[in-house]
Length: 500
Image (cartoon, rainbow, N blue to C red; front, top):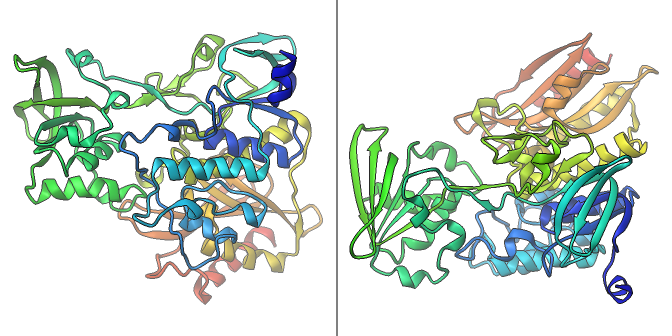
């Protein structure tokens, strides 16, 4: 055991914070905690950093994109707007690492490219991980939590679980137990040559499978009750992987996006599948005969015993219920990082979801999470620099125009400036919009970037005065240039009215 402690960082023992998981959520959370000087242990069951990207997507290419060359240098903060796969760092040399590894065959990286990016971040930023240390159980103690692992027990005041949404989930359909889940799909796409394949599900993993199979299978059927929201997909970061199968369907290439509720699944004498379903968009019975079937029916967070500890869940047990600051809604001191933070959904204005299910969104969640933990549990006050009122409007205009936080997490994050006690202004930094609206505080102006259901992007301001909040939006601009005189005057007027 002594030798093990020499070879591995973070031996079992007592730490203020323990972070579980070495995927992008865990690495980003650990990096942010360390930058704040918060002692913690980062542990992982894996033998190298990377999390789910070490083995998925099954056909080896991600959904999210990185533009290797962009209008900004990779070391600039603004470059993050064009790079949805790198983690974020304070040091310019550790930014935009994904672009170093992507081969430009396509803008979305392969699994080896993504894992190389994450491992490089861990190495270059000195984000140490105790690998091959599996979290197995959790219990309360008087001073906090005890995490039981294969290496021993970890005691902490705060536990952060960056454990992903990785447990396979199957819809309760009679016969689906005979269908392999996404995680069990054969990686050899050529083995599907000339076959009819039914993919159960029309969300990310379903279309990802279809995208990989369309060049090989004779026909691909994507089946679920809800229709494809093409207008939303066309404006999302995963559109490239969706639209090829969707276009193949539209132009009659052998792919079908079928809106139907599956009643049962049967095996055929030849070893194939018979799918018996009922149409939803168009009512009536539907029967599909297929050589192969795959259940792309989703995943849940691997909660282990956290539910028994009192952590509530949402979406039929799929995700842990969370506050606006990604803390368990029912067990104080337990937090979540990574793509499980999508459970803190925000306002979902116009039905547009947050980007918290992707690296491009939850990397920013992790930074605010670390700051919140520092402030709430360890008395580490976040910097709140004073500003002259005349400097507020230029700051907020630049944020609306170029902030990667606001552009990546539209309608989810706001940049906030409040009225200071001395008559000046105070830069409150970034906050979740839902927290700004719900938690109140001093008079303040908060700006963000939003997108409506038609895909139009526009700036928005939220003005908190005398305990009430007023919302004001501006029209879109053809090139999303929100630094023109009209936008400057709009924000300047609100600053004067709100901050004096």
